[in-house]
Length: 68
Image 1 (tube, one colour):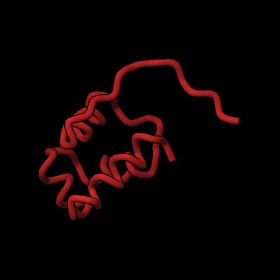
Image 2 (image 1 turned 120 degrees about the vertical axis):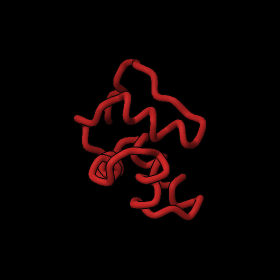
Image 3 (image 1 turned 90 degrees about the vertical axis):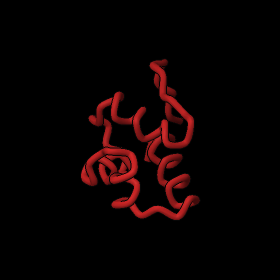
Image 4 (image 1 turned 90 degrees about the horizontal axis):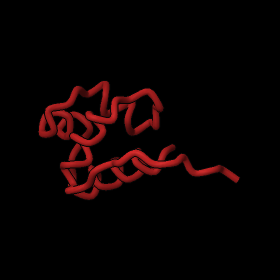
C-alpha cells in the first residue's frame, strides 16, 4: 500500500468516517476512495489532492522512492 493510501485511510478512520461518508464529504466517488485506499497506482493526482485536502495536505510530483 502506498504512503498516501495509508495516510488517507488512517486519517479517515481517526476522524470516524466510513469510506462512504468520506466520499460524500470530499465530493469524490466511493469507488475512487476504495481504489485509493487500496493503493491503486492509476488514480488521478487531482482527485488524490482533493482527498488529501480534507486533512490540509497535498501531493506534489517527485522522484519515486526505491524499494529495498
